[in-house]
Every structure is written in structure tokens, then in C-alpha cells.
Amino acid sequence: MPPLRRKADPPPPIDPAEWRPQAFGKKGIRSINDPIIEPAWSGVRVIVRVGRGPDGSPAVTLTDEDGLDSTAEFADVAQAIAAAALTDELILDGYLTVEPTQDTRGLDMRAMETPTKGELLTHMLVGGRIRVPEPKRQLDPDRPIAFVAVDLLLIDGDSLVDLPLLERKRLLDTALKADYLVRITPFVRTPVGSLALTWHAQGFRELAYKPANGRYQPGGGPGDWVVVPIRSR
Image (cartoon, rainbow, N blue to C red; front, side, top):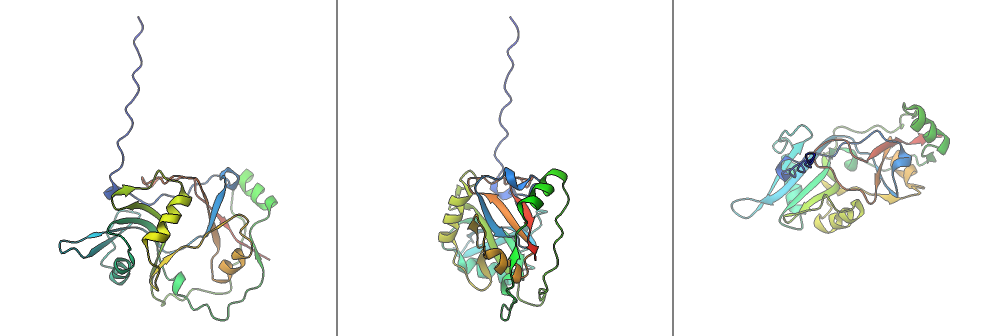
């Protein structure tokens, strides 16, 4: 009798304390079914953990992509997140960036476009980057740093990484109160339309495409998210 082949045990789930931000992949945009489209934020990518301290007050830690604790460096932002949390325990994915606090008065709102289908097809087939002119508006680095939440991974002990992204987005809106130093990223379903114009005028160079039904990969490896440049006329 031939020996039976034993199936390997599934890998143990990653401890939430070890979660890292899901990386962007390099697949073509056509591989994304029913995409959610967001502005692609710059800055420091962090995992934010909100819990309760020994005295019952909110305790917030910020961990960057390398697993280093950045809480003390951005203490004002951590304090703002603690005040914005609407529940006792959260794990959030997001960015520390000056982009949300820029002065938006007097922006040039001339038409901007996402890449054409032909440009996207060429990008998918031969690779490389679509050439994108720099926006005329430059970021002011002296503006206050804010936290922009792009995803909700855990709430009150319940992991959400296996829920569809669109459901995680809905829960994120109920878990965090937006304020000057705490923001929730805007998003749109296709077509992106005039929002590409607005985002480019605000200084964004790229759009993030994420599948509405996609799950989150907390191990830090590349997932099913991609970045597409915004094209200027």
C-alpha cells in the first residue's frame, strides 16, 4: 500500500501585535475587480494600535513598516488619535503626513486626467512608469503632521482582516472621529471622474487602486493593491 501524503498544517495566524502594513503589489490594474480608488498618500506608513492603559485611559502606539515604535516622535498625533477613537480597541493602517493640513486656498483646478486605457495597457504589458508632470503646488513641510487612516484591521478584539475592504471601510467610519490631526482617507468607486482633478490640484501624484472585496494581508508582504499615476494634460 503506497504511503499517504500528509497535508501540511496551515501556518498559524499572525499575532496582531506583529502585524505590518500590507505592501502594494506590482500587478496590472486590470487584475483588480471592482476597485476602490483613493489618493495615494505619502509620508510614514504606520500601524496604529489603540487600547486602554492601566488607569483605563486610551493608550496609542504607532509602529512603522520596519516594526519600530514611533509613538514618542509623534506624540501630538498619538494624543489626537486617542481622543478620536470611538471604541476601546482599534488597529488601524494609515499614514503620518503633512498632506491633509496643507493650505488649500487658491488651488489651480484645471483639468487633470487618469491615464488613458492605451497608456494603462502599455504599462501592464511592458512595465515601467507613465510619465507624470510634477504638480505646480509643492507641499509645505512645516505644516502640522496628521494621521490619515486608510483601513481598519481590528475592533474591540475582533479581527477584520478577512472581511471585504468595503465592509472594513464602513466600520472605519464608525470607529474614528475625524479631526484636524486625524483624517479618514476619501475613496470613490469607478469612474474616478472629477476627484482625480481635485486630488491632483491638492498635490497628489498617484491613485491607489484596491479591490472592494479584497482581504487584508497583515504579514507585510505585497497584496492586491496597486498604484497608478495621475496624468496631467
